[in-house]
Length: 348
Image 1 (cartoon, rainbow, N blue to C red):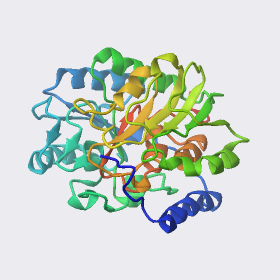
Image 2 (image 1 turned 135 degrees about the horizontal axis):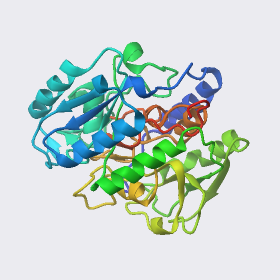
Image 3 (image 1 turned 135 degrees about the vertical axis):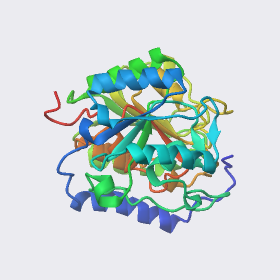
């Protein structure tokens, strides 16, 4: 688990990442257009009744064409798949995926990992141990990181994947509904950047001042030295570093909100000793991210707040903005409503 005594990645690497994130954003043009419903395939596990129900509801709300509703079959409820089990499922998927599909939406919480990879990374890249790491080591980076690519499969031969993860249909329905509600809403919420007392998990705070400087004219940004945010009704972004985040029940997240906590096991969705990222969705967030295997506190393995904020404000969908914010996403799971796009014009 994260250890305050463990050295961080070298400061020169952090500086390079920071420069890349902010300097490149100034020169790379925004994508010509964001992903839309015709480019997203919904993946349903026919042996999981909850997956079937979530998939059918999501396809209806987002008007997903029948050819982009992909049905696979594998025993449900296990937390993980072996690489061999995954390869069999992936073969079912590949046979049904059309060339126009640029991204996938999964419709289950379990399984959330494939051996050492997250389930969303495995569906994005295919299972590859190069995206895993034992201990505090780097993994293969994502070519999608902070890119201007608008067609990830066509341009980069990868299909970003997000899980519409929930433990009940009611929770999934609420998540989907607020994702749809977010579209083109241009919310006036606040980005809350919490600098906590947890030194090992607070490593992203070094970027906060620059985030406020870069986005302060477009977005209300508040940097707080607190272990928990409470009693706020305008949460659009919430980034923090804690094993467990308190006070979620006192918050109101605006539709389309993104929230995550940097810790070792947030992506262990259903059986971990730390807070699952599902708690963010249950509290009202529309997207979150967490790691399924020990990442240490390597910043490259967690969302860069400036990048996800920048791409989201630029009109990209949740799946695009969030995926582009993680340099090494092989051990991390993305959960939420993929097509939510609060800052995209002309979506209604």
